[in-house]
Image 1 (cartoon, rainbow, N blue to C red):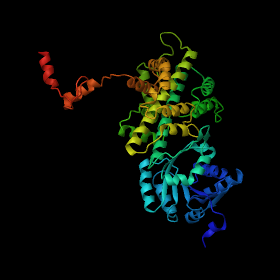
Image 2: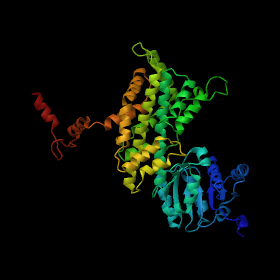
Image 3: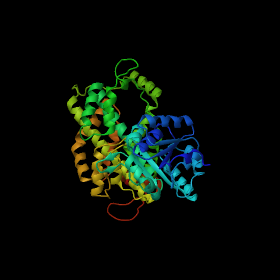
Image 4: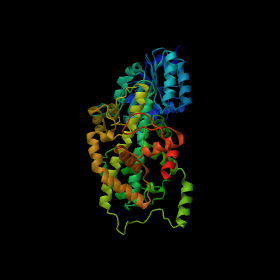
Length: 495
C-alpha cells in the first residue's frame, strides 16, 4: 500500500511550508487550474489551507500529512516548492522530502535565501539526480495570492518543467507574465536580494520626502495623502507611493484620535537582504550609496533611546531639532516645495535603480550568469514591491543599449536628471539648512555629481597614498607608474 496518495489522481505540483506566503501561493496555483498537494510539519496549517481552498472557490488542493504521502501524491517528474524560513529549515525540509524523490524530480526554494546556499544545494541535489531552482518571490502575501513577480534561477530543465505554471501564477503585465528564467546557480536569489536592496532605497527616499514636506512644509497627513495620491497618477506611479497615500489616510482606531502613522514608533525592522546587498556591492567595488544610506538609516532608527537623549542634550545647548521654520525670515512656498520634492524623489530613485542594476551587471560578469537587465526590469513591472511605471522606461533603456554603463547616462534619463537637478538641489539644501536628515536623497545627489565630473580630487588622495605608503600613481600626461619622494622634495621646496 502506498497510503492515501493512491486513492486519488496525482497532483501536478507540490508545496511544502504553509505560513501565509506558502498558503497564498498554493491557492494561487490551484486557482489557475493546477491540482496541488500541500504539506506542513504542523498539521493544523494543512487543515487551515484546505479550509481556505474550499472557501475560496473549491480549489483543486489536496492536503498531505507526512513527507512520504506528500511526495508520492505528485505526478512525475515531480516539482516541489518549499516556502520555509531561510537557512537550516530549508536543509531539513529538503532532507525530509528528498528521501522519497527520484532522479529527474525538482526542488524549488521560494524563500529569501543567500545565493551561495542555493549554489551548495544545487550541487547536493545534483548528486542525487535532482534538479534545483532558487526562486525569488516578490509581492508579499497579496502578491503570492494574486500574482507575484517570480525570479527563478538554477537548473533550466527544472524551469521548463514548471514554466507553464509559473507563467500563469505570476503577475501579468502588457508585455507578458512577470517571470523569466534568470540564469544559472544562485542568480534568482541574488536578483531578488538586489530587488530588496532597491526596495530599501525606495522606502527611505519616500520617507525623506515625507519628512521634508511635513517638517519643512508643515503639511498635514490629509494633505500628504492627497499629494502622494496625485504623484501616483504621474511619473512616480508605483506600489510604494500608492500605499504611502493610503497610510496617511488611516485613523488611529485604538485611541480614536488622529492618524495611526503618528503613533507608530520610529524604529524600522529588517530581515537582512538590504545588508547583503550593501556587502555584495562592497565586495564587487560597486558604489551603492543610496542603498547603503537606507541601511544606515535603519540602523540609526534603532537607536531610539540614544536619539532621544541626544535631542535633549543638544536642545540644552541651544540647538532645536528643527532649525527655524523659515529661512531668512521668509516662509516656505508650499506649492513649489511639493513640486521640488516630487522631482527630487524621482531623480533620487533613478540613482538607486542605477546602483542596483550596476551591482547585478558586475555579479553577472563575475559568475557568467548572462543576466538580461532589461528583462529583469520587465518582470518587476508587476506583482512585486518595487513595481513602478518607470520600470518600463528602464527596460527600454537596456533594450536600446544592453551595454549601458549607467542608467543615468541613457539619453532619456540623462535629460530627466538635468531637468530635475535644480529642484533636487533646492530640496537637499533646504533640508540641510533646517537640520532635517535626508541621507538617501543627498547620497543620490552626490552619486550623480561624482559620476558626471570628469575630474575628481582623487589625485590628492593618491598622492597621499604614495607619500606614506609608496603606492605609486599614474600621470594624466604620460603612461606608467610613478613614485615620488614627497617628504624630501617638500623639504627642499621650503628651503
